[in-house]
Amino acid sequence: MNSSSTGIAQQVDTLLAASADASDLGDDTLRSRVVECEKAMLMLQAAQAEAMVQIGIRARVADMAESTSSHQPLWSRECREEFVADEIAVLLSCTRAAAAARYDTACRAADLPVVQTAWRAGTLDGRKVEVIAEQVSFLPSTSVNDVAAAAAEFAQSRTAPQLREWLRRRVIAANPDAAEERRQRAIADRRIVITPGDDGMSELWALLPSVQARQIQEGLTTAAQDAGADDARTMDQRRADALVDLLLGRSEPPAVDVHLIVGADTISGDRQRPGWVPGLGPVTADTVRELVGAGSSDQHVTWRRLLTDPTTGVLTDIAEKQYRPSEALDRAVRARDVTCRFPGCRRSADGAGTDLDHTIPWPAGPTAAANLAVLCRRHHRLKHTAGWSVLLEPTGVMTWTTPTGRTHTTHLWRYTDPHPPDDGDS
Image (cartoon, rainbow, N blue to C red):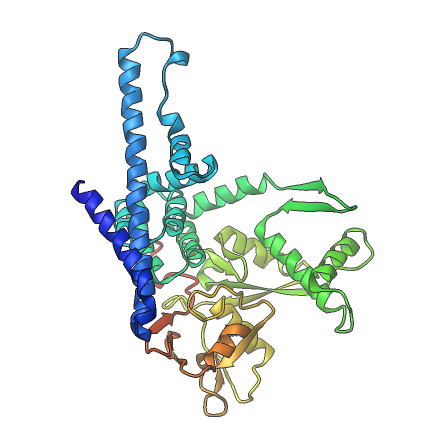
């Protein structure tokens, strides 16, 4: 057994030993074991991925040797590389699609050394590797390694969806023109598909520009909420019925508010920094200017612009005297936080089932953006559970302390990257 195989065997032995005596561990050690096992498994994922890449490399080399030495016609020659995913599927007893996806992620990681290193160290998982590789593929080659390195570091304390949104903004900012070209090509693929189903039902599927899809979602939700608390239908049923009524002309579109977070320099055209639509994500500067122009002509949609501070990339603070935040402050804080502020939670801040929580209880703590944070109902309850504590700093950093004393932080969402006053147009 070589040294590499020995190292992998030791990691496996560590995992097996960890699962055997967990009942005897103290509380803090038990939690450390959870983290240690995860790291070991990620290291094993990376080792497996590198082995897959090597299978592919050797198949390619064999195919090249065959093509240069054989006098057989092309159609009769072996093509080992084409069937690497099929072989992996057999080895792992999984579908070819699953094997192909894992092999593709492994190959992409091999082309990004800093990502491969982080995966090998157990700080990235396969899904995060896939997200980084997918997003940096849109970047010019000169900036791929720098962005990939920053993404690998950012991903260590964030979820894959958080990482994707973080990267999407940077991809748009790095090459706004290319991002706008991709958007225009994607818009050309818009379509509606109806798939007949059983029991008199059908699926209505639409591929639409994201901004319009978001407006439709907001409109249907508003119509569903307007039905009244005594309506026995579920929210999903109300939305479905509202869609039918709107499309068949039996009702008027409801008025909806949609937030647009953007820097003043983007609206003026001085910069091409992306904007942000809560619940949707980053949008190109051209999209921002289109929406600003359309806002004055669409009687059913009110686009509420919230400006960011160019030196910090976050929204500015607002304070009020009463316990319950005003509608304006409520909108601003939800737009600022984007999601629930519990580490890793992806519950949308502007969706149902979320609250604005005073980190320091009122009236000891003010009704101000600096003391308010969006929490989903579950994590709002967790905050008040014995042993948990939360600190919200003036910078927006929120630190959660677990019952065993471990700390985890979340940060205000930066809609734009901070920049010095004299950074030009770069």
